[in-house]
Image 1 (cartoon, rainbow over the protein chains, first blue to last red):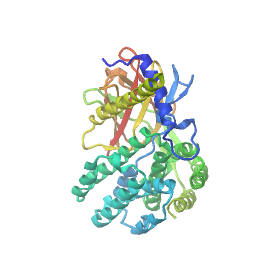
Image 2 (cartoon, rainbow over the protein chains, first blue to last red):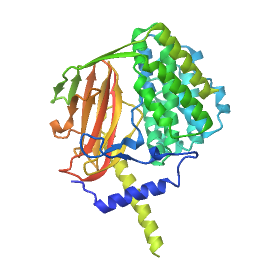
Image 3 (cartoon, helix red, strand yellow):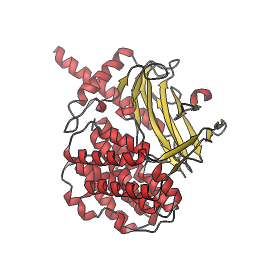
Image 4 (cartoon, each protein chain N blue to C red):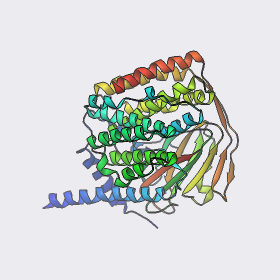
Length: 297
Length: 136
């Protein structure tokens, strides 16, 4: 049985917070950057803490890429952020946002087995992660496995996700939550950009677009503590996008789940439906493109 | 001299908390087979007593999700519950001896809240970790 000494635990908690103040990101950082934000009295019982100051799980760009592949979308190189743009990214904010963007591009490329482009984009990801002082914290095996598995789409998805999880862990451990949030934001924006392209002709993808409202709200919250000028522009654009999502009608129906204890599995039978009209889709697309342009240009 | 000792204590204590989280993350990772793809994020919180950590998540239809959790160097110390947006309880691993991982099959997308807290019969403080993976 694993039990921590109570006093040692609190000393460690306090000391972690103290040390973290020495290595925070540049710029204004609020309480949301502390390891855990304690909110008294909000839980069903006891007090509530937020996981790493986050309040939402953002969908993986890999997950959206897989959906796009299943929609039979055709490869469109014009959707990618050109690698030539990388020279424009000077600040940490720009680099972090575009590390997320290029990660989503990699997931998109994996869909279509474009080996040469995948290698080119992976090099950009390596370069940005080096600049952001993230690469050193990521197991070198991830990089070698990428090249070894360049022909295996499923492995590329997994390696991509593993890379970003390792980066996320390292950045949060280093109290660089702003950078971690920006990478997630860039990935989400780029993945939605791909999805919007496919949503025009595929109802499943259109529905998935409409299901992004909660994630978007969370991104806006994630970015709210920071005051970097470009970051504020991105956040403002996302907030405007959020108004479109808030107008979508979502219908939810609860149904009792079925549990399969032997296989450690639960079948969730509840359902939800969201309708996105052509006009709503177009408005979302225009606003999203504007945010993406702020990020990549 | 006192200041030096205090500084050393601070460094060792902080490293200890980080190391504890790191070990738990490694344990949680071990519950994923190759078929599951990580969502790219790590959810962790230092928990004490009856504190509850929570976060919201959209689980997308057509996917199977695996949630792996732990506190300390193994599973079974962390209780997690999944609620829908109307606060209907969909699952609690407490009903299955604090199972350290569980799969969720979704036909349709739903917005959920995950709550996690320590099993006070086993631990009273520690680093709670949740990892999420998915497969088509």
